[in-house]
Image (tube, rainbow, N blue to C red):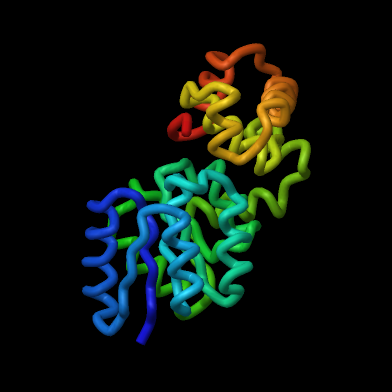
Length: 215
């Protein structure tokens, strides 16, 4: 019997995902969590085959959660299930150790395909993410970054940037990411320098140009 953990802070998403999973994997035992602390507590009590993981839940909000989950259960498979643009985030999370990345705007039927792919082959990539992966492999780093300047940012800088474009201040971002305010200020300066922007409105406009949604 497969044990699957659905980690999302929206009850309607957890319900919908549960229905899809039960239709296709009727023997699966489903657990739910709505914060990262709940995820970690469950990981220490149960061995899971798969985690359907939202990357924007209370208590997390950064790419380090992939490593933290795998530190507790190295063999668990992680399918990131997020509303964030896969063009910007998918390859980053897969490189960090996730087995796949699925955008919530995708038809729910694709959730079944993603889970089946991970269960049988260990990986899942949408056609769009496959194209991004091939592009990254076949394009020089300078050209790849030129195609989408946001690719110049490190994972941590992306974490900071996505909160800044939501209008959060330095102290709020520092609290969310468990960083000092001076460290967040340093990241902010690096982001502005790498992307050649001078203020938050310009950063928001750049994100709109190069992502489906600004965070």
